[in-house]
Image 1 (cartoon, rainbow, N blue to C red):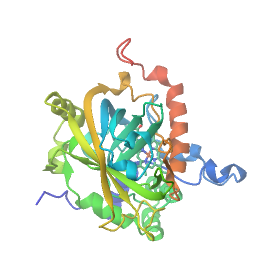
Image 2: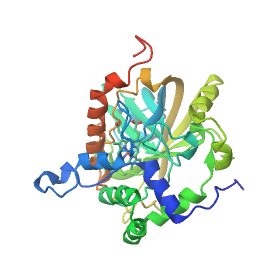
Image 3: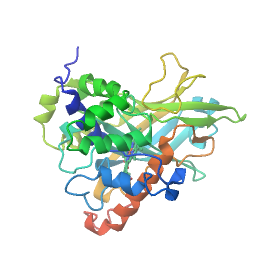
Image 4: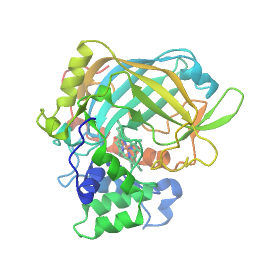
Length: 350
Ligand code: HEM
């Protein structure tokens, strides 16, 4: 049995949830929030995400720590039965990605980030793009973007009753708390499974729609490491580990697409779909080279989950539109502050 992290108090877990996911919330502009001054805006979401000493200038407002990579996706062609997206047709396509950590502070040690992320930009020969930002949690802590904003607010509140009141109103948080407190930790980005959590609609060449989620299954065998052992490692141990691993050979994941059945909770990323759903392995991601974010090609990419190729579109899941809105503002702000996050080496940028 892999060692489990020590039991955490429910409140401790909630704080971890809010800090690690940072994420934000709500109806944003896409539900015409501009008509109602009380309604949530992307500005409020970014304010709720910001650490007490303010965001790190030039950096992402969430998942602030990360490292860029260049790789490729070898599609085996099986995905063409689900979607006519060009990068699911048999072939090999370039990928620019980012391994990252849920969290809003650059000084937070890697060992504290319960959620790890993998962001990918696939490009087809015709220029079509598929961008996705996935996380290692098997489901999201809350069911709606509004609830995520409420979670950020409750966890930042000094009122003792704020989190219990939030949990009473959003019982799905207990599932995430249980996962955060019991799932094994690993010592490597390469050993994690990453999940889209949000659902999307795939359309095949015949025009048939299917609601899907996707995951990246690691080739590397996960090795459980206790949180105490991780805490004893250097604060940026994940970047060091992945550099060493890659020096010994490429790192790979298999992409798995899971198809919903009628009645599945397609609009709610806090609920996993039942076991036994049709699942198709559509190809292999190979990571070839890493580059520090300051000089790397992922720095200036917004991994907006609504950037989708033909044959894919958003579903009834409200998160991607909300995320798109918040990511765009985060991107605008960090791009405007680029002088405060300069490239480390002149001419290093691709
Ligand atoms: C309403 C809900 C959410 C909000 C408001 C939100 C907000 C954000 C923001 C502001 C960023 C920084 C974007 C940038 O500057 O490029 C970000 C990054 C990220 N988010 Fe979210 N997020 C939400 C939900 C999610 C969900 C459901 C997932 C995963 C399934 C996720 C995974 C990630 C990842 C992996 C990154 C790093 C992207 C990168 O490498 O650039 N987020 N999020």
